[in-house]
Image (tube, rainbow, N blue to C red; front, side, top):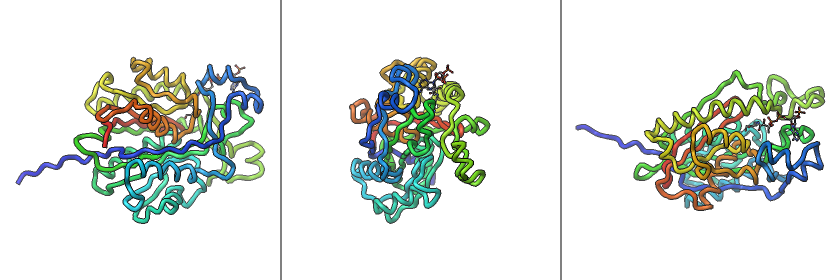
Length: 334
Ligand code: UT7
């Protein structure tokens, strides 16, 4: 007897975010380092960023986002099969931040692991979770992008400290109905460009020593121009290919949700893809670059603003340290 198996796609069934209450404006930064509101606004598009308080860690932000996403999806933590936390700023080396989340939200049946692809981690996580649902390995997955980059930044380095913010975003994934859900996904990396964005000390290669601290090697280093060039070269092509794999044309896409690293990077992608302004979500002004949290934060805001309706064709795209990049296409709805 011939049998056909309809592929079970994974859909986003609920979203939640955690936005720290402490706000740092460009004028606040101008009192800390040699910079101005004009420079930051013109070069990056950022006006404000939210920062975790001294007692708030990455898992604290992740847990708030997770509980909100579960409530939005009307899914109980005990129904989760897996938790993936995408982060470059875990609470500690191990246990994984995902395990801390698992315990605190009471996801007793769930597996848990962290995924590190820097700012691309959330999109990497969605694609990973989507494949596991499609393969029937798991049914319900919580994918979180959570980050406290403020803990890794050198607050005396004006080239990096003006760019970042903290936050978390979470998505509950489950089996989709009627062809909705993730349609295609692509991940990529260029390890030869690893030096453009890195934290050198603190791992097995170079433990944190007094010398490392004096040389600030435990802080994030970035060659901004190199990252800029890599992003504008790699991501538009990645988006084109991911859209093609879904069987769509670029003009079929209703909304693009890009990683929020720099307004000029987003504008360059938009120009290269020849997509109208209103089809790109931009919220960098309010949050700065929140790394793995940036895509879910932007997606959540778009949903809140009523910019996404059932059946819409959405593209998520991210890039970051590694160098890593990832994109996926989604037909919106549960
Ligand atoms: O998630 C991925 C992570 N990172 C990114 O996506 C970052 C990508 N890169 C960028 O966003 C941009 O390269 C930056 C915003 C980091 C820098 O903008 P830029 O237009 O590439 O500036 P630049 O590095 O060429 O610097 C221009 C000038 C320099 O002065 P001189 O050498 O021309 O005298 C910098 O020292 O601006 C100076 N500068 C600043 N001035 C005021 C650098 N940072 C600041 C600052 N305030 N905060």
